[in-house]
Image (cartoon, rainbow, N blue to C red; front, side, top):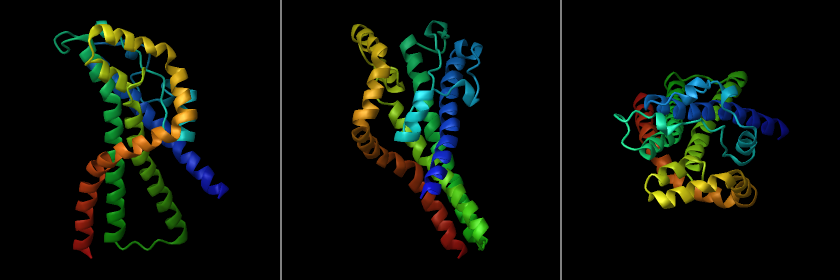
Length: 234
């Protein structure tokens, strides 16, 4: 059991460093696409984990299964007015880029999982002890990439400043209410910490419920295609 726990922690750390880095890179890339080079000038237009990982968010991810990275700096004043109608609509697009990147990672992880499983079955690969352990580790990594990135996408869409969901929701609010809503950001770390410590289980149940249709959309069509192929080659 201790060996299994260490293995799971190492896999989570691997998934954390890559997934959150891609998440923040997606924010920076979208902002750059819209005309703001603030993140690029600070070296954040990269998937290098050293540029993005937040220690508290990393620990939260390893322990609770959801977390966050250092927010990418964005200055909406720099947005190209030919590409963005309003600064808030631009911020919505930047905010959505992160969770969308996580869903893309989840789709790719599941696709690779199904593809490798199909190849092993189609070629009738005999899994010796050493190789069996290798495939188990590979499948565990792919499954963690899949499930964790769905969790990351959903967690970051919670409407709590400074999470991405607050920017998306803020785009639909009247200006006066939006200003008051964004003012909550000064308490964001305390709110996030309280949610993880006291409400982690409740949030986890909500995210698990919302994840059901997303899991179906991302997994079932690909799984069905490969199951059809597996039955065809048997």
